[in-house]
Image 1 (tube, rainbow, N blue to C red):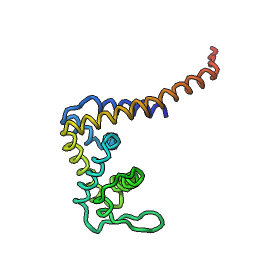
Image 2: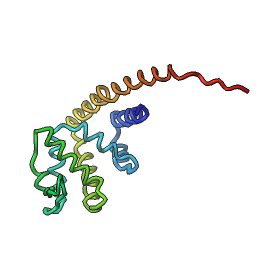
Image 3: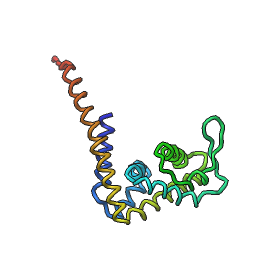
Image 4: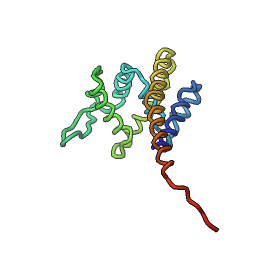
Length: 171
């Protein structure tokens, strides 16, 4: 877990290093590490997440549905075209968005979700006010969540290592 936190710290630092648009494009297009997209999303102001959903639903078929819960079907365009201030509801929408982003059953929808999200983020971050707010939110997440947890784990790891007896190798 500490290794994953270190990796996450490094990824956050890359995003916070004020990358050029070209570098940001490269980060977002890195299919081996799609976490950059989700990291950027965690930093977006709530209004911009709603705007992403409004933007992306225009590219989906109107009859696109996804199975939720115990066999209920949910229309995606209806879900995404309604902005929400309720964080719990917004998180549920994000969960459904993630299902579309990683869908193996709907390859065209997966492609649309990925490509339009990248387009949206690149265009959105041209706005200096939104970029500053997103960066501040990312800094807060890095400092208050990731770095904090890493510090706690490091204390615990150091404590555990102090109890491990030193191995003596005899010749």
